[in-house]
Length: 438
Image (cartoon, rainbow, N blue to C red; front, side, top):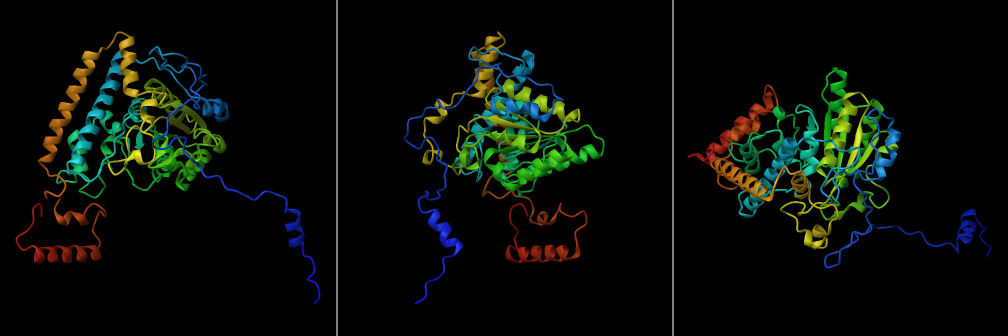
């Protein structure tokens, strides 16, 4: 039998015989349930050590800020360094009041879900500064494109608690008429775009809105929030490309709370670099900020807002924080992370840090804090009782059935009119005596 001639592929295989086999790296979180927790591997710089570049600087000048961590509040509970926004005590107390209200609201709604009054809720415990402090640095009519943990922005902007609870209960008072999952609010009057359950869709929408604002010669900017896990979505990268190319007046807030449901941030790339560093590849400004430092968050957002308003372009801000609670009421974090992580998190709690800062200034005390917490809890309780009069989950009192066909078209097309009439007839046949809310 004739020998098969040696082919190039065979020779290449022989040459690789002594080479190691290829392997893949699968990210693993540092701690699992039951493991001891030690965050010593995190580099936490001293407060006040970060330079504050001019708001109109070249984007590349922010490179150091993408790897550092902008901090203002030190261990002495005082403000330090060039990023200190120098807020007056009354503004700080207002911010603390919003923090307390969100905490009270979250606690009440969480209990309501456990009592069966709604199907779903998401707390933002530990992340309050990333929304409230940031929103306070924006103009009240700047357009917000939120993710699903920015309830603090609505509260900061004065959206009625009753309307928020009606939406969570999907009752007859729900302004969205039961068409959204609980906590996916929307308010045109408060420049708060509809929350979407599809991850990262809000980012290109924010950039597009900002581009439209610039095209019209308006003065309003856009700001969007996205979790670090969602930065792995294609929509986020499309948003960054358009923002960079067209110099859109937009702020891209990435809330790095270490966990995307049960997947830790390494699956989105955190093992390789910071999320703020993603700005560098697109040629936009980037800042990595202590997300549990209310003053640092305010200062970073203000810097980015001023830059956008002066046509300096977009900014990507990574808020380095920690999700203290579960992802939602459907999640049990004890199944994928150590129970000690929350207590060991080195950047502390934003509410406690702001409270202690005010106390250090001589502008607050524990008694007033207790009174504020009690007043907020009572206000939420009253709003909850009022909303429950409009119905809760499974107790009827929903919007009339016919409203399912409303609010999409200015004038209902003929085929939807036929479907609407047919659906209503069938419902009347099935329930001749009617149902509550119909």
